[in-house]
Structures are given as C-alpha cells and as structure tokens.
Figure 1 (spheres, rainbow, N blue to C red):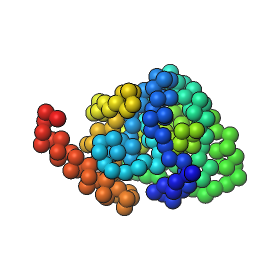
Figure 2: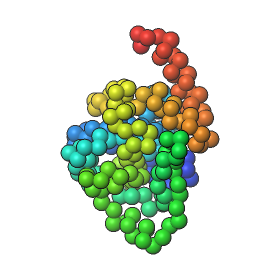
Figure 3: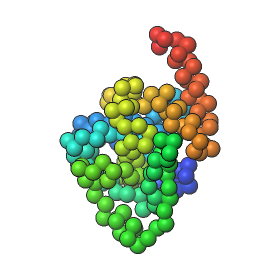
Length: 198
C-alpha cells in the first residue's frame, strides 16, 4: 500500500536494496543524496524516495535510461508541477507552476533523453518504489563524488553524499522538516570528527 510521504503525496515507499541493485547491474554511476543519504549515515527516518545524482556524461545517462526502463519508471502523476531556478545567491529553489492539460500529457508520455540531463530531473514511480533523479540541485556528481563515502547495501557498494554536503544543502532555509535532520547530522558530524580513526 502506498505510504503518505512528508510532502503529503501518496507514493510507494522505495525498496532501496532493489533499486540500488538494478542501478548497479546497469553500471550507473551516481551518488545517493537526500533523505536516503541521511538515513545511511544513521539518521533514523524512512525515506519517501531514493534520491540519486548521476554522472552527466551521455554514456552514463544512457545506462540510467535503460535502468529506468527496466524499473518501469514513470513520472509520479501526483507530483507537483514546477521547475528549479537558481537565485542571485547561487542557491536553487523549487518554483511550483500550475497544472495544465499540456503539462499532464507531457508527464504521461515522458521518456528521458541521454543528450539532455534536465530530462531526467523528475520524481519517478517504479516497480520498486519512488526514485528521484536530481542531476545537480544539491551539487553535481563531479562535485559530490570527491567527498562521498562508500556504503555497502546488501553486497552492493554505493557512493553516498557526505555529511558535510548534506548539511550544506539542508541548512539553506527551505523546509521545517529538515531541522531535526540537521541536528542529528551535526551530531554525527561531531562524532566523526572527534574520532579521526573512525
């Protein structure tokens, strides 16, 4: 049964192991970001989706497109319409737009184009739950991977956004729900830095 996510939408919770296994079998290069990354660092929460930031070269996006096809991924019909805009301060913010018949039709017929990274930038529903492809809102793959940590999930090694990068994203004034996550991530950050050998 679909669960109610933090944004109030009804969506199937992600099976992280299954999603990561499919992406791994397709040899997709990506970094786990967002709430799933926070959970993998030890924040007690149940992610409403698996956020990934993929490498943006055409070969990798082609592999990602094939993986999405095998996952039967489609745009979430209940997701809000809108787009990201970069402000004068350099931060990207979500700007919601009205639903139109054209927008609804485009969502229903969506197919990602490996030549256009922005075409992947959507919240998707798949046979293994919700998956959010985020090409660069929290930083690009090249920016994130240098600081990412490796985590093994059911025998599959994945790159996970660093605590520092997560905090840089979450401390931008955005959502009240992020406050507790920030507090817990800062505690984790202090613990890691207090023991350099960990």
